[in-house]
Amino acid sequence: DYVDFKIGYGAPADQVQRFLKSVHLRAAEASQGMEAESGPKIALKENGDHATRWRLGYVLTKPEELLTVRDAVNLAAYEMQEEFGLDLSTPTTHVVASDNASSSSTPSSASITGSADNS
Image 1 (cartoon, rainbow, N blue to C red):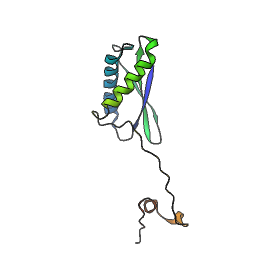
Image 2: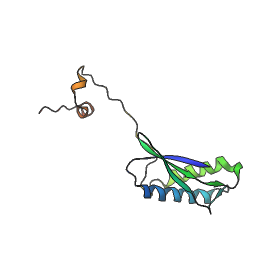
Image 3: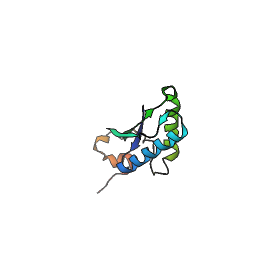
Image 4: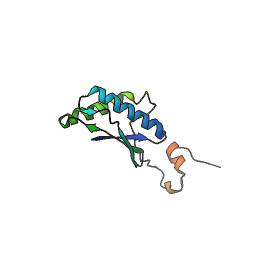
């Protein structure tokens, strides 16, 4: 089985891999249905618009514990994100609307900050 995590750009790959290995270890200790000995299978699956999607794969020893193991993985990741300097939340996308009818000639920084470059 596996759980995917969206992690914001800027996080070094080795840091994310250490984080996911630690998540695997903690989840294996917390649940009875995951095999710890084989170790995690970690892969970068997608570079999305706002985040990268990393996959933490693991072996179930008790398929009937599938949901319990997933919960343990998610809880471990949530609890450990700060320790590793990561943020599992991804940014909100905003649409900036301009009150100015000639917004096409306004630089994007001006429409976001409300200041125009008068040089």
